[in-house]
Length: 373
Image (cartoon, rainbow, N blue to C red; front, side, top):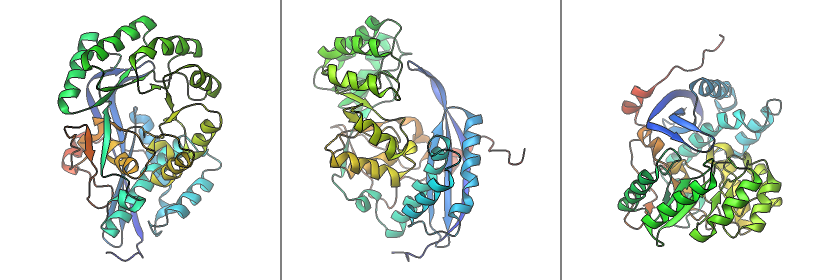
């Protein structure tokens, strides 16, 4: 075990753009590439910590990266174990700029990198440091079944997920005509049968009236949840859907920090909570949100970042599913393996258990922020 007296000596950023095979559509997005900010923290112990975040626009990624680089003075010569003190100092330093949004996105990979160092220094995977509840995590396929797919393509994709071992999958809704959404769900449900769990996500694209109508019609398909039917800020509409629909309402992926989660809980705006590791600002605040939900016996299913979210689901008894999103697989040397029963074994490698594959990443690099321009 390495001495606990470790100091961060450098903060380095790398920007990459990962092209997708085809443009994907949701009710509010068209996605053709995923832009990632990679952060490496170096230490005087020779241990490097790695973290990342993402967005969909290279210019905005550069702005986030510039904010991240501006926080070098906050972390250089600090002990990466001091994640609570670092979080406190970060939040206070961003009072003028806002304690959500870009500032949190910028700090997120720093916090993850600190935890990666902590795990490596202890020679322990993060889920053990958090407190292991399970060593194998149930996952649902989230890398397909988009609005841009025809019904025939949906059925083919669903069959492919089942062949890969998935026992659950999520499809996107929000067609201009709600009857098209019903037909699409019916096609997928007929393809996978009742034995495979199915979720649906409207990506905040509906009004309250549209969501209520569609939600009632979806009731017969036995969905695990109806995700983000209305904008995340409309707690009144979401709470109405929670009361009036039999299908659980899942939300919270675009809420920032545990304060956003707490507000939604108090307003009863969801029945399944989906905190996002990036918008929580890393593991430090994510753990706070998940444990707050656990104290209230509320279920958690983290939003994407599968490689890193595995440790959250592995250490939380109130976690139900881990979202399997393959977008970021090209960043890492290690692979996630979905076993025949739809589970992923949490890595027992030290730290986050996934390391950047710089040889492969090089081909995806894009220019960083132009400081002083």
